[in-house]
Length: 71
Image (cartoon, rainbow, N blue to C red; front, top):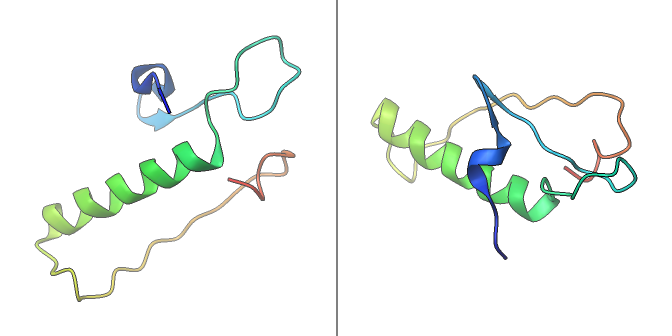
């Protein structure tokens, strides 16, 4: 899987194309979202000095787009 990670960065958040039909290439797939989530958890553990065995609670939301449930 080749991902152009910089194309997903938009200021302070992550944005991408998640569904076909917009005329643009899909670059935000469930696999990419999973990679981003793992990286976020790794960063969060490092930032907060949390051990791998400790629990971290993170709230995740979605909007009403068709790609929401898959992502």
